[in-house]
Image (cartoon, rainbow, N blue to C red):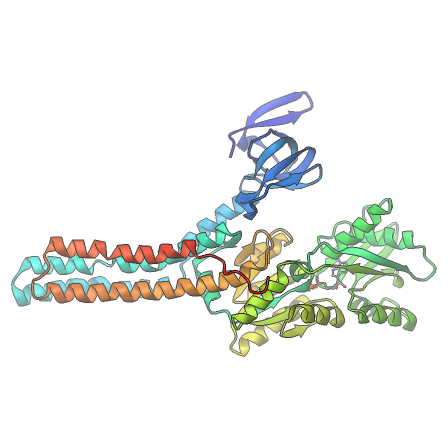
Length: 505
Ligand code: ADP
Ligand code: MG
């Protein structure tokens, strides 16, 4: 990170230390400088190398309005960046904190080792004492204490976990704890959220159908005002559609997000509800048979349908369309090759869910579920003896991410809530990393077992050679130290483990 930052102030530029930068400041990032904050480009254009954050090797073009991340490098061009998050709050700062947490939290395998460690020292002392008493040779007793020193056993697990986390990080997936690696190795079921996870999360509006005599522009204006503060991909699509048509969007006077359902807001005296048609109908919105038929008909073609209600009456239907992420199909295919059961859990309508599931070859579908029901689906799978990873992006996925054995959040499309709750963040939103992570974690657990067996074996041999007095303190120490080399080498192998090429593409 740069230490001296150029701030653009009304009275001219000012150079300040990094710690003095606050959210809202506009700072200058010159060509070749590292961007010191998370923020938005206020003006200028540059190609930015984001490899440090997303793992993407090609630079990305940034222009006014684009988001930039602390720790990324402005390669060609200069930018004025308005700081939104500084210091610990930036993505980079969070990564650092998570890595620190990961180093502190112990995996279950490590806890087991710690339990045995309590017995280990008294046992070593006892063996040493017994050997001294039996042989009358104090050197043999000292050798016994040396070879019993558990260095290799202590290295066995953390070296493998750190190598695994490092491998994942180099490929753009952030694994927060060592314990996650162990949980991931046992996963046999992956449940996906749909909108924003399997789909791009950048939907666009293909149709806006006004109802009850309103004009299309008015429907869009009200819907966009209601969605103006929404973080949901569908909400953003509505706002974008209104902006493209040159509609000016007022700020809502009240706003509430209803996760998994839609939004509720008030603008210009109108009570607005925008969201899932069926749930709004159950929320006191008058939906007559004709509107219902219209909505079902649109839904039957496998589309998401959003109802706009104004003052308790249907005002319009919006039809967004969203493309599947390019990584989704290969990821699902590879997971199934690995024998993993795939499940789709979405708040969207059944036909849209089924269409996506069929396109990707997903085994099991749950549609029209609320956030709590996503949890119930995960719990039901777990009750059936399955180890579940849940992949999601939204606020509505938070509870399910927390319940699953392993929560995986989309890094760029994902909301902060999802990222905070999940144990793994896919920093570049690339689903095809998932099968790699699964395979890698299984490899890591195998390496840990091999390490432990090997170190116990070496201990057995060393004890066997110490009792008759073949090993001396010096040769005992040598054998002992040398035996950590294969263990570390076995763990280090994991850093280089490549992603298996996906079949069929
Ligand atoms: P998923 O589980 O696939 O990510 P969500 O649970 O986020 O989907 O949303 C489920 C449904 O709820 C959407 O298909 C949409 O009909 C409705 N919905 C949720 N949030 C919004 C919103 N902000 N604007 C409009 N509709 C919404
Ligand atoms: Mg979602």
